[in-house]
Length: 287
Image (cartoon, rainbow, N blue to C red; front, top):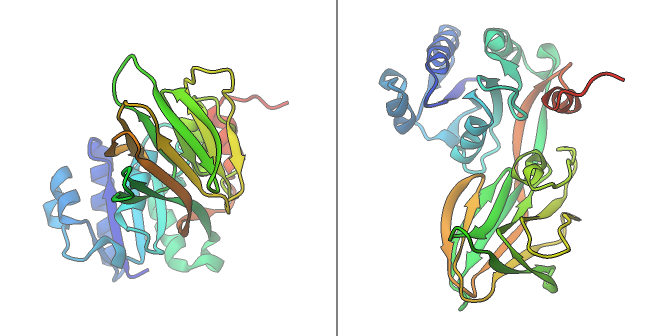
């Protein structure tokens, strides 16, 4: 660990204070610590702004909640940089340590996996591409949680045709279709009654949002199976990637989702399992 990028929740003063402490700790031990200029400006920490690109870091320290972790993943653009998530939200699925554990966690990371008692957990990501009806590219993105093809107008549904590996499955009249990773199974997909899938698994989950049809179940697919969603009828749709609107879709447009060759790499310490976080999140009592 010689070059650490710091990413901060934009609306939390305690996260900004932790960023200053983290930078001081790192610099005092001979490491480089910086924020991208846009990030530093957004939180009023211009003295931490550095010229280096996010994907040149050896470590990313994310100070916030799951949303800040998602932003951190997108900032490094697919580079194989480990991420350490420090929780300032409620109970984050993606973050690893609490704020009062930050200095200890940094010391453990500096000590290395064997002496520090940590390992890297690889999380599957999605490659998302969109094309208009003539096959012209509308854009390409990468997601950790999900891609959503959804309606644009309130009070209406959108008609979407689902193809799996090029073969027609069925069409949906719905508010949208979610294509998620196992990591995203506890995000939007869960609120649409999708299944919870271990993030160590590799799979694609397709979950309809408020479908106006009897078939309303999620489909869990092998990661080798690509998903195409075509916009039918005369109503426009849109794509959101990890909660961010990225593209409008005219009728006839197609969105293709497939497992990415890139993974997100999270630092995990011993003693904090995903299943225990899940249990605490839902308030499940011991039995």
